Amino acid sequence: MKLLMTRHGQSQWQIEGDSAGFDAPLTTLGEAQAHRLGMYLAQHYTIEAIFASPLKRTRHTSEIVAAYLDLPVTYDDDLREFDEWEAGWAPLPASMWDMSPATEELTPGYSRFRPRVLAAMRRAVEPYPGDKTVLVVAHGGTIGVMLRILFGSDTPRMWLWNASVSLVEWDRPGREGSWILHYFNAMEYLPLSMRTY
Image (cartoon, rainbow, N blue to C red; front, side, top):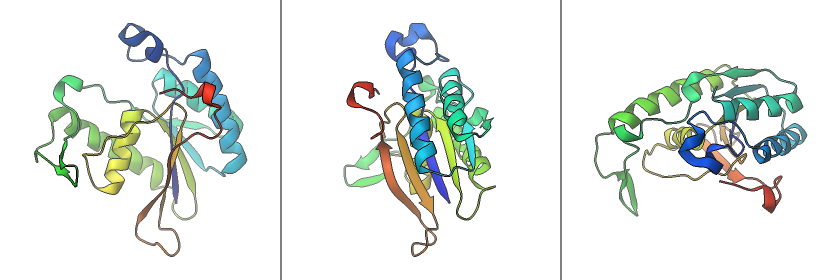
């Protein structure tokens, strides 16, 4: 099965900072990015289902994309962005060449975030075995954790651009029993003037 992951379009928080609030809506540019994303996905993929975080920026992005795909959106609260910075983020690697955690114990914040993202992933992926494609519309932190879970290390950091797409596939013929990363942060459908992070 294929798992497509996309970050929401540009949000007001990216313009105004903390004054916009944690649940900031999309900007006008963010809406335009979501329309470009929806057109691209409709032209290139047959998507079975859409799952999204219920926060305003992801909700609006997923609604725009869903209109192009003619699909409903399932909102999952466990796909929300990380919001416990004071309780600690993911561990750092032991070294540049050793991706194991420098400290074995996960921080309290990350140790709560990781299992909730995993639970949401299971709910999105497991009902669609075989040659199916599922789309998750979420946040940079959430998608980063999804990829860390799939590739077995909590230490890598990932920077995702707005409305970029990442694709992983499980059990591809000839590569059975493994996750394959096809691409990360793809955004060829967005002109340079519309790319934001």
